[in-house]
Length: 269
Image (cartoon, rainbow, N blue to C red; front, side, top):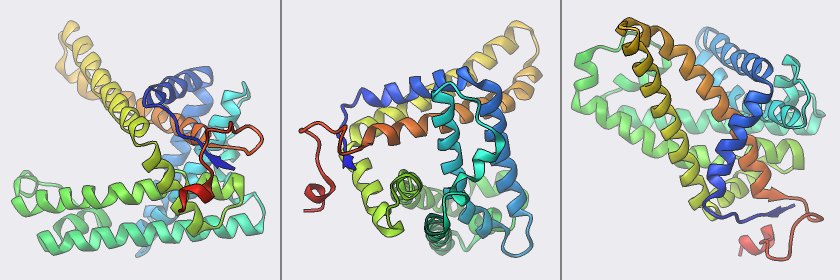
């Protein structure tokens, strides 16, 4: 396996492929994504450890979405059971995925804990325990600062785990090593990742504007509020579909890699 360095415009290609693959199997990809949401939501209902359990399941669940995308890209119909692909890949890789889950949950909880130092735990309590988000709370300077701190700290965590589940599942890489190469791949392809993120931001904004325009044409502002949620879910499903292509292009097999590609050994120097 070698790391592939791609041009910035490839980030836009990932977005296009994600949308195209989703539209090829819209029912299947929507169904798998909704199951993904349902599984994580049900996990949060477990008393005391619900939030941590959902976080620990996230790497394996996102791997399931990537596996579904791989099937859809080949013209196949991904079945719902593909969501648990990570736990059907043999004992060693299943354990490695569980380790990734624990590391992700621990990292996220550390971030939440650090945010509590900023606002006295308001944001942490809202996320871990739940509750009503009031206007007064949102406008609070400490709460906003805790939110921004959490977002800033979450970025490196998300890059560490961006490719890690796929590296563990498809390449049998050690969990800690997969985190390193995931971060390295994101760093080396920073331009493409930036274009990818900005393009999806544009898609989300464009979808919101389109819904608002349609609602205004019908003279029903309430329609925008009703339609926005399902539209947002569909766009999110497309986004998760596109993640597979960012992995596929950033890592290639030794046989398929051209001479210009950097090897992991080279990158670690």
